[in-house]
Amino acid sequence: MISAAQKGDLTAFNLLVEAYQSLLYNTAYRVLLDGDAAADATQDAFLSAYRALGRFRGGSFRAWLLRIVKNACYDQLRAKKRKPTASLDALLVSPDGASSHLRQRSSNGPLQQAIRHDLRDAIHRGLETLPPDQRITVVLVDIQGFSYQEAAEAMAVASGTVKSRLSRGRARLRDFLLTQQELLPEKYRLTSGG
Amino acid sequence: MRQTEHEQTRNLLSPYLDGEVSEEEREQVEHHLRTCPECAAELAGLRWTVGLMAQMPAERLPRSFVLRQTEVEPLPFRFRMPRLYPLLRGATALAALLLVMVLTADLGFQRRAVPSAAPAAEPMRAVQVPASPEAEGLAQEEAVEAPDAGAKPVVPAQPTAQAIAPAARSEEDRAKAATKQPGIAAQTAITATGRTEAATPAPQPSPRHVRQAQATSVAGLRSGGGLIQSPWRVAEVTLAILLAVLASVLWWVGRAGGAIS
Image 1 (cartoon, each protein chain N blue to C red):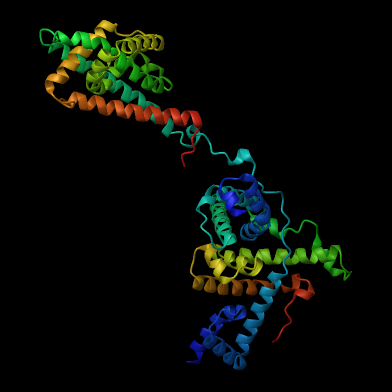
Image 2: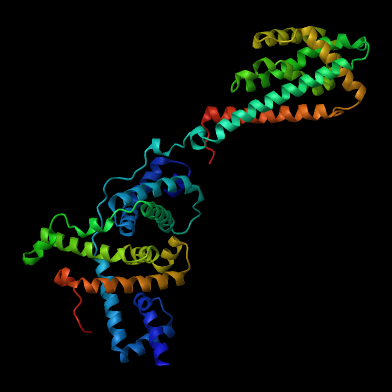
């Protein structure tokens, strides 16, 4: 599939798009914490990937793709710096008033969704407290399930760098989430002591 | 001592979770954990954080990111490098202009320096000469014609200088060929001249004038005993080559919208 796409076959490339778009979009979303920006970054990344496909020389394809989307994310972050919009506001407001449901201990369905929505919000807010390098590392390894090696490839850094960024990023996120525990559904709370 | 070990272990907790530690480090961590509740709590906290992230629901795609053909086609050169394209055209026009000036100056000097009469033998040969350079020059005419209308009137004069070198060489061949196959040679001359006239409707120097100029130029060449006997020649050749290159690039780029990345 990749070699067919490398010859310039757009249809073949689009098969790759369909296979990897969720990964790219999710990563971009967690890094940028903004749906529109994430969509832009994903679009840019796929376009760049199509044009640069000839330069892919084997190795982990998804790491290669992730590197491209990481760069696209950095571009978005830089653009955002020039015109600061309060992305934090977008996160703090839970549009469907999910938290109110938590008071009632009803069973699954919309509640489950609401619970997970709260978790997602909390983690996103936590991610936002991280500097971009740590944020990307945490997203790649802990959310997208990359190995240290693959993450190193995607970020074009040494494995040791991944290790330290991950360590610091996780610690910071943990500290944030600990302060937010009351907002989290009970099953997600850390039982104190241990 | 304990402090550094404590610090060390703290830094190892995260990779320890992932099994990304050496055997030695693993033992160190586990040994330390038995006696340090602080580190144990830290580890539990990390484990909890990682666990939460693993439970994160995936974001739903807002749309498909499949690429469309139109998105993917490279922009035509003139849009991708808007500053470069007019520059290219300008350079081509300038090269053409310079070539004209050099040629004119060259011919001007040549005429003044003309020996009393071109060798009597020349005019005969010279008749055939217009056929070849003009025929050879046709290809060039077409190449230059496209981008810059301003260059048109100049075109007929161009092949003159350019083809003189090959003409000088081929003249003898043609002379030989002429004696062998007079019919074909004559035909070529007629067809070539016919084509030339059709191709250049713009005002052109009269054939006689051209022939005379060519005769004297050829004479000059011959007596000089070499192709590059003056800086004029060098300039003409250089400019002509430059012009041909620029014109071809311009034509190719303008036509194909070539993706120069």
